[in-house]
Amino acid sequence: MFAVVVLVVLVAGVVYAVVRKDGLAADRAPGAVETAIARRLVLLSIPAAARGLINPNASNADAWRAASDHFAAHCAGCHGPDGRGHTEFAAHMYPPVPDLADPAIQAFSDGALFSIVQHGVRWTGMPAFQADHTADDTWKLVSFIRQVPRMPPADRSGHAAHAAADGTHTNIVSMDGTAFEPRELEVKAGETVVWINKDPFPHNVSSVSGGIHSGDLDPDRQWQFRPTLPGTYSYVCTLHPGMNGRLIVTK
Amino acid sequence: MKVRMLMIAATLVGLPIAAAAQAPNDAQIAAIVVTANQVDIDAGRLAETRGGSAEVKAFGKQMVTDHTGVNKQATELVTKLGVKPEDNPTAQSLKSGGSENVNQLKKLKGTAFDKAYVEHEVAYHQQVLDAVDKTLIPSAKNAELKALLVKVRPAFVAHLEHAKHLQASVGK
Image 1: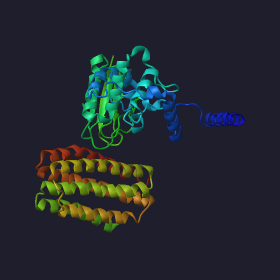
Image 2: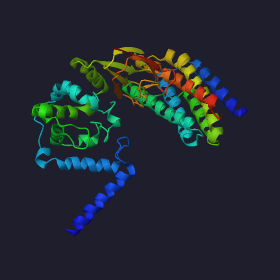
Image 3: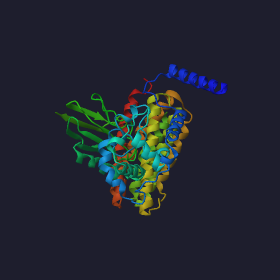
């Protein structure tokens, strides 16, 4: 009993010291130890019986397609249309939104993924969707998550375009041959613009004003941005002088 | 310094002559492309460690990343096409010019390194662009190989601009 009390006091002390030192701000990336412990805790919090559930669509290779619209409407806002987590929010959340293709995420069992979508994860941005999902919806999303690492870039961009079908219009600018194509794009405020890097080296999308900052995007990676303020925004790739484009946002 | 200038001039003149003597075939073009990228990757690696300014180090790192990306795509393409890169005088002269440059750069550090490296990057990208425009694109037979050269060309132009920009600021 005494040992337990000492342990609890020690742990509380460490937590207190860490919080005092680093604060609770969201703009610091979690360390490898914290990430490993947190992922382990998430798994431990799911009852073994739930973790062991098998996806009823396991034998249906096309089940993920039925979840495309659903993913685009509910999940893509944070996880990105391709599930890679390259969104406006993803990098600025604590913990950051994970890349669903990450082997550490793919190592979760079907049952664990199902449980996470249904119940959410406390102390992260992951909400519980049980109230407005049927179990069947969620299992199809699990199939979709399994498909994420296998989605070729073309399929991913196709999927981004697909998001247009449910009212959130999506515009695509490709970065190809060290040029933005189309070089000038006009969109309505609130529409989503997706930049896709089709070159074999990184590019970025950076504007002087308007808050367009993708960070460096590796080949086949994409970044989306939803401008809300009307105006004309000139942007460049800071890595390649002469590579520039313009986004015109109308009311 | 004089020796360096002469050396750069020699490579500059040497490449188009060697290439123009006989139009290279696709297998030779593949070897030229891979070598040209590798030469700049090697110099970039050196700049990452020996560079004086943060800008030069970052430029060196980007050269490694960009040219590695191009080489990866070029290698994938020739593998797909079943073309085996074939050594030739142009590739050889690029290679020897590249190792000469690396040997010179290894003797330098800090601002002296930055100056010599950036000066060579300007000359080298100009040289490679000339070869791409005058020899490689016109000679490439396979449409996909030609398309790859056309696709990556603007990046080399951007590198040249970037290097010229650095040249104006280095050591100031």
